[in-house]
Length: 369
Image 1 (cartoon, rainbow, N blue to C red):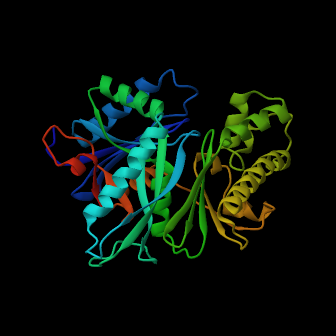
Image 2 (cartoon, rainbow, N blue to C red):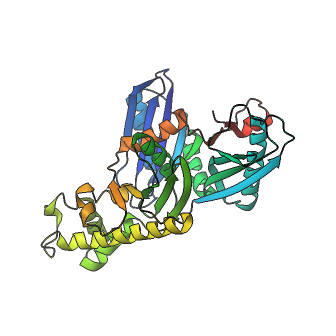
Image 3 (spheres, helix red, strand yellow):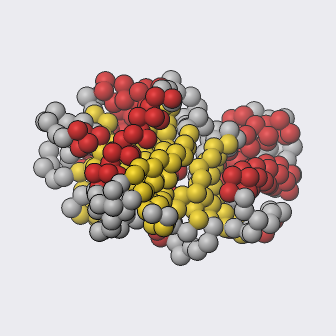
């Protein structure tokens, strides 16, 4: 087997498993694969094992550990602000670490059923002045932090860890997929002003809104692409399997239409009606949480939005500027790899515990690695 240094990422979605192995020393040395559509979780472990074997074969490298990318309709974002007095001395990273640790312990105390995936410092207020990043050298009497925690259900995290453990594979980092994708896409797109990344999944829609460089909010709606499938099934009186097939091939292959459906007009009305509803719910969430009155850009991503593309957006009755981002397997896996290799400068990077001894804070996280 190869002795090259690889990192492996598994995006474990509700309807599909996507994975990639990257050579950290050579961006061109990468291998990607994905499962077919998952009807349920009965074959989940088998599919993960097949993907592991495929990546090991293609890369000629054993997979001993993975970075796990997941989303969930039950994930949470929690904002907390903490402050501390100083005596006019220099503000040090150790002061920041202590306050972040205090905030983390509060989250773990009151949200026992959740795993903290990301800790993001959105603002430093030092003697009444706001800073996006921690200044190198500054003395202060009083400072506070605005911290955003992105949390995933602990039960879900442990269930995947158990699967990989049975395959003798360790899970290194837990990554929120929609967060990683929003960071990746935002860095590659020339966007200014308020922008919301709307990730339409199988059974949920996540909303991540940026105001300039800050993540202003993360919200989850319990509606996704599967609801469109159910709409088609009910209105057209066809099976869920047939509805899913029609949805995935909508506007691409008219041969799959049943004899009862003479054109795509009815399909388009059903699909656009549910899409407009999802967008309106997203719009309502963003405005109510951020008190926005101006128009803002929405970027639609995710498996559930693949039935639409930019040429259909003019048919959607909606006030905001909408773009449809046609993401690929490679896009999703690259977003996880980029987050690890070039982390968000505002994020406190959680480092898994090692067997060797470290200092107290190093066991928990490195600050701005």
